[in-house]
Image 1 (tube, rainbow, N blue to C red):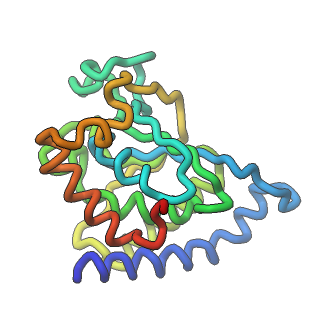
Image 2 (cartoon, rainbow, N blue to C red):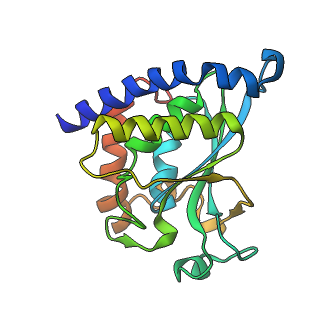
Length: 213
């Protein structure tokens, strides 16, 4: 029931955000010219294996790459990021077809995919590398994310304030090959079964109308 209420709140805010930023988006898109069908979103919501597995299911998502962003070290290795000393967050860079799925809808999936009130952690994954973060690629994405976060906080969707960081996108460093498509390649492993699988199951129920056929 809580998940259903949360989904209704997020869906309502999604419509409101679209209305509130319509004028701003028109300013960002000069003369309302057509936008490229291909677009990019970058989200951090805890372990990137979990985020990747969820967003891969959405219709309109063309690719999901696990990697690191938001730090101060060039070309960091996974082991370095895990130490929490590079400043990077584990993120997924999502390439999507904006004629099939909008950035607004990706934001709705982002906030449903994790607990955005947990600071620098998700469950037992603890550290700044697991922080909740949106790295925006243009002014329109920034406006959408900020308005969405503001209205979610005001709605009381969560009992605690949302701590999601909203920052401009910087360099994205793709993680090692064995991190890519992790859940699909390692579904029988313990972490996949006990951590990722429950998140995937909940995600499927909430976004059943948005999944790939």
